[in-house]
Image (spheres, one colour):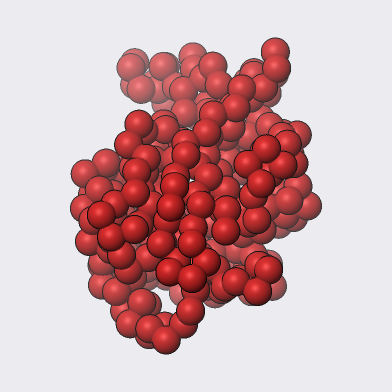
Length: 262
């Protein structure tokens, strides 16, 4: 089973580059199932219903969220009907939806779970470790591949989480920091891991945003919003994981990067 996981889709450029290139990536890597983090897909924060369906129509099978899950109130109007959407499992707010979902592809079950980390994060959440451990205990008899999107800031926290669940899930994939890390690997007990998958968005900005607006806010303390350059070159970051359908252990994880033609 080959799973393609796309990093945080950021704004219009991110949606565009995914829509225009996903079919090509699926064909090139012979992908069976596509997951993408969509928490930044609408103007950099949140995911409105229109963009949820735009991404599904492009060929994405499951969309995960993150700390900006409620940045657009529109989410509450459609989350109960969004059966391909996975919001963070361990959030304290009751917003409906599911923090873990089960899919079936070619007779093989695939579970996707979304978890929020705690280091340098402001959201009120229950323990990431015990939230996932409780879920795993509750589905002990379930025969499924299990992909975990660990949405967190600190690389070390993500690494700890990967090692803690090595052999208990098929993959722990870090999201949120928008910069692809160079540590994709298979852990000792068969769990695929990467600290951060990266992002899909403007290649020549900062984390998918227009660079000068980010510089003004970050370096000079100006009170402004991060902007977008919708004409920027797009970039796709992700990983392709080859998972054994019987043992549910990962055989290979490959980080991918695609640059849109200028």
